[in-house]
Amino acid sequence: MLTKRFILFAFLIILVTVSGWWLGGLSVPKSDLLHDESNESPSENVLPPIEPVANRLTWFYAGTGPGASLAAIQQEMTWASQAKIHNIILTVPVHELNQLTPVLRELLASLDNVHQLVLDIDLDMPQERNDSWLEYARIRVAAILEAVSKANTDINVHGVILSAGLHRAWIHPVKITENNSLSQPQIDSQPITEDRITDEIDSLSLSLHRSLPDLEIYIPYRLPAPNDPPSVGPNWEQLCASTITGFVFTVLPQDRGLGKSGHPHAPVQSALRAGKKWIYLDETHTGIEIDASQEVAYPPALNMEVLMRIYQRNLGHAFLQNGTLALSDPEGNGNLHHPEFWNSFSEFSILQYRPYEPMPLRELVVVVDPTLSNTNSNTLLHEQLRSINHTGLSLEVVATSDLLSENPPQAPLYLLVTPLNLSQDKIISLHTLFASQEAVVVWITDPNAVPQDQPTEYLQLLTGIKSELQMGEFNLRARYPVKGHWTEKDETYGTDLNSLRRIILNDTDVDVLLHYADDVPCGVIKPQPGGWTSVHIAVPFVTPSILLEITELLEVPVAITRIGTKVHPLSIHQPPFLLLHAPDTEEYFFELGQPYNVKDIFDPDAGWPSKMTLTLPMRLGETRLLHMKSDLPLDNN
Image (cartoon, rainbow, N blue to C red; front, side):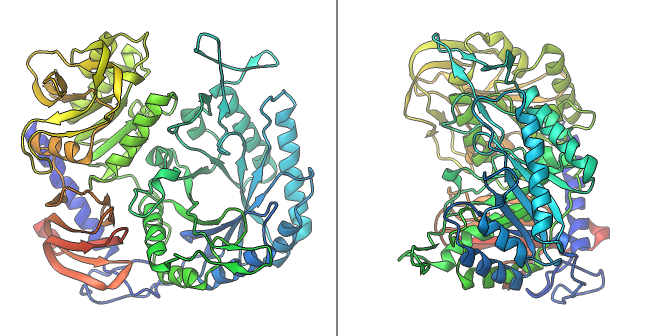
């Protein structure tokens, strides 16, 4: 088992090295691509030709509805152009069917054929739809496109974002019956189901592509989130198989701030694997706005240097995860009305959109079920996605359907957020995949998210580990019983809120990883038939420290290891890049596994030649995007 893992690890290192040599050294900030020639030294720079406008990494997004300031948006668009940002997204708020708002009409008239235009069209999905709604949506989109072509005959609409429903993401609330169970709302005797919503989206997309085959069509989407009402949304697997071009993903408000993770709340790599593009809609609130007298009002505590750390983090997410970043003035009232902001972004024009190329191996594959939506499972999902982005592991976030596909993602480590709604045949297929990888599989179960009609026998079938559901009043904090590399002896984590249920893991021939306060096991490790290893953790989420301890205990190969401080920075490793964002002012230490020449893309003066270990003092919210080029000859890897 270990031999195969080390072979996989060696292959990953070779792939990282080859990628590093291919992408090469970092250019100066005025260039437009990262580029390298095999015979140049690490300090040499090559200025390649500028990529076409359509390949730009960064977009500008502006709202044009009530309260939007024409002067503010026009100035922001001018600054955006000076920063080499020519891709523009303009909202089309609900108005008369074929009428544009005055602000939108003026903005369209000011564009020229240098710009790529995308329209975010609000389809005004009513709470109580009827069968005529889909025809209304088709007519509205066609009428808007015709009105835009009349407003400016020199521009073509590059794409549309079709927005509707709760959070603009085609989510439809469901009703609660008197016995507190969920029921689908009935409209014209037809339930609003995942399949129906997805069919509506695909029907709109097909209709548009018949007349405009090159039009890019995007759908806002996000996974269920804490505090969401019970709801139903589109079927993720069917969306990925539909004719849409891609998705608009957002960050939850609690993850946007300085020092936070800033991760898109979505299965990003699942979309990429399906050939879809994605846009990171950056909704960071700056506090800048145009007041009633049309003067720019700046918040007293505005610190542009600190604010830029957040935008650097978000740009790094989009760059590393093969997306595009949409800098947003969502209300069109001057949220980005600051020349220093745009001057800073002009320095990042070195970064370009990176088309997705699947890696044959990641260190971690995180698997989510987009179909599940209830208060407890939503919270578990959010906490786990936030946690894994602080491990420093190269990872993919995919859906359960990806694991069951003909070409499933491969890794030495999988993490699945349960409960999963899978048949016995599908569970057997998963276990066969895990056995083929001799993988370590971590299952995270919140006892309050397990359906009451789902017996623990199902969890045993899923995880390969016996468990028992206990009713009562319990504290779900977990205790790590020994001192590790990232945890102290008897260190605890979890919630202090009491729970009316808990899961105890009472199997035999297991190694205990975690205990409840009363020493009952809540995290155990058990080898499985076929050569894979199951790790079941029956508390609401796993911290970066515990997940890294698992990689150490079970000898999961890891390319980059963070040591020292117990504070985990945001660490997104997509070879040959590493994105870091500090949650606190600390000195962070990294073991790189082999010598690298390291440069910081966001700070061209910062570089570390031939380093196997790296020490980085970082301030709260500081962002670094490291480009790591192997210092070893190819024949020595």
